[in-house]
Length: 433
Ligand code: DLL
Image (cartoon, rainbow, N blue to C red; front, side, top):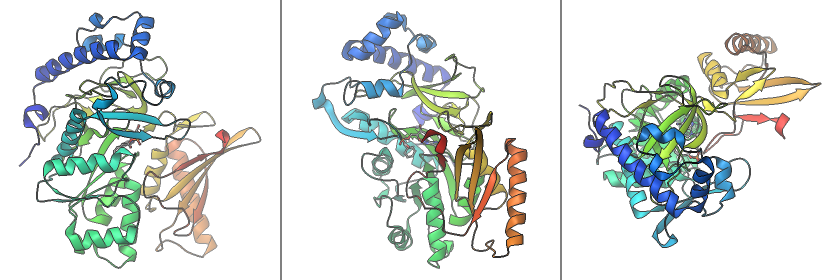
């Protein structure tokens, strides 16, 4: 039996969703135009007046907002309410440049905790669950976002944060944690340590994992489900838009529902900026339509995905968003071929490797060089050179036939690659250093 946290919204008709979106969008556009000089200038420059936006069909008339706009207005320049209305700040450092700072009013936090509670209920969570939050707490939105959602649901919230892995596992076993929230790479690390501590997954009470904040593959899903004895679900979000919960997966495990009462998602051609029809792959763009403190419009996420409105067996009507296959800025161009790290992950896991890997890209004598460092499991680790050579050759061939590009394969001993308690660093592109 499917349960919903807010059925009147989560299963609303498309007409009702559009009605809510139109009303909220018009309201937001007027508000930012009047309250945020930066948006007013952007709209004036684009020749768009608030009254030109009469419904979601007019959204494309608005200019995009990009990460640089957030950096230019650092720290509070895009806030649309007086600072005394803001009750929480979060920030994301990204890999380059200044921090991105976002703010939330009391209503914003209510809405955010609602969508995180929707996620928990969508994976079968109830007030009887023990929600083990191993996303980092702090300025990162993962920890506090899921924490507030679990409390809103009335579940028992265990605010363990990330790190201190053995202690986490003892807590997980002794308290009987039922829902684990963390990055997929930390889940992989937890699974490894659980095995090393001699704990059998049957001693744990985990039934669901809510894994997000980084790209991960269907192969990784199967791996985590098997090693942790749970159902693994995807959750998507980003600091600029809200944090975790922008889109959430239900028990159908067929991609994520985007919370359309709070955000309007779009997919655009990343080069031309044109909106693409549903079903086509491109860059995800989100507009916030319910936020008070930080209502960003047409934000270019740089994440690559697909949107599709299709009937879901769970009964939810929100548009479906595919697993983001990566970011436009993570896409590697190796000798002219586009490669996403997630494609490499998929090959490795299909071939039975454990999912700890690193990709090194370099340019040597004007030629791109792709090296994949692949960790072996203790079972496959062999000191027989001939075995290792054969495995590396086999993998090289699999990578070439899937990606269409040659790679050097370096097989390394178990535990060689540094483990991640948050987002894993999979790619080192020496061409950019
Ligand atoms: O990662 C928020 C979050 C926390 C989401 C916990 C899910 C769970 P940022 O640190 O701002 O926020 O990073 C946002 O992470 O643009 C994507 O590139 C990536 N990302 C987030 N979720 C997924 C996912 C949080 N499920 C950036 N699949 C986004 C793939 C994801 N990539």
